Length: 160
Image (cartoon, rainbow, N blue to C red; front, side):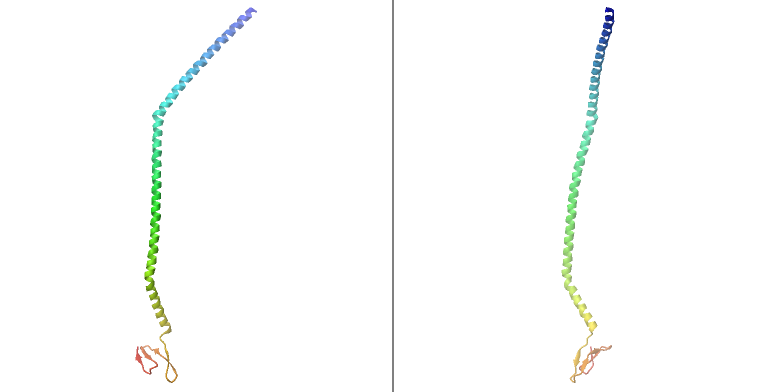
């Protein structure tokens, strides 16, 4: 039985040595992985420092400029809008004042013209006809003939 234990012990020794070697390889791979990680992180930090940070600074500066321009445009738009509304209000007020002034100044003239037109139209439609009574009680109407001679209550003809 001791021969059998020798072979078993030999195999157990070989397995123990292989386990130790595996542990050393795993530790070596872990150390190599950690070192590679540090190198990659240094590389990423370098790239970030050299390229990303300046690019971000430029992008942030551009955003600040855009924000400033946007606020300026907004303020100017509000100012122009206010000026336009004020101008429109002043134009409306001026138009109202002009309208009322023109109406006030032309009201008398328009009234006179309308009155004159009504008088002329009334004279044209009715004509100038007067009825007078002669002493004998007869009605006599004054009339215009085409020559402009008026005949009527006085017994004689007269020029108009």
